[in-house]
Length: 368
Image (cartoon, rainbow, N blue to C red; front, side):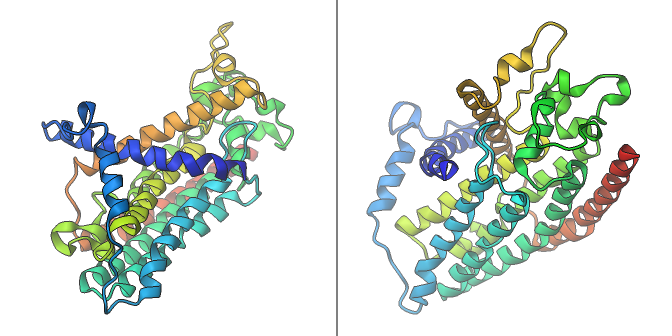
């Protein structure tokens, strides 16, 4: 419940800033200014857009299925928002600390497909329907390699609990009584004679403890772009072909809810990527001899300072990944439908299967 209460006001604030930053980033990449007129450097442009959307009339086409049309944005937002409930924010703020946290998150987020289908079908518009069909095909296809990558991390960490994964990637592992057979988690740098649980920092991240997961992180990032309908995988919303995709017939507040869910999903996938691969809420600064950088920048687990620092590092890493998603949108051209499917089924999925195999062998060799 505390996690939900944190994200309830945070997501709108994040979306407000993310829209402004993306506009400015797009302007920088395109060698233009972006919004400049409303407020200092255009900072109030997003507020003006929000006020416009709130005041717009909620128009529902006469031929649309009104129940499906009106319910779809709510389904999409609730599915995305519920996923935040299992994310750990710090060492003492674990969210819904369930033993199947990863499984729950992926299952609940997958329900946004239902909302997309409702939006496309209920609008009774051919462009909306085509966009919904593209979205469903894309999301279902890319959930396969995404699930394989997450399975690889679960095999290496031997847990579905996101908070336990977080503790495994920090220097406080020896103080965490929930871990069993701790020596099995020291394989990343142990061959060099370094005890990563004492050094901490970036050396304890999964992509360094188990280097094969670096490939997993790349696959995860690409698949997350498709899950979020972000360029170059934004075929469900390709304005040049489908006007506005599955949300063509939406306006005003309901359109804003769909966009809020999209930006929320970007943050959710980035937070999940940070927890799985990039050390979660742990500090990236390692201890170097007598210089206890990790201790100073992580705080004692469970304390007020530890919670504040943990949330800081988690959000900084996640927002960095969000910025990479924005950067990719304005750098790469949109893929065709056949190219998108080929990439998902013929490239990412085989690599995901290979990653699962190597992770299993890696884990088996480390236990032996």
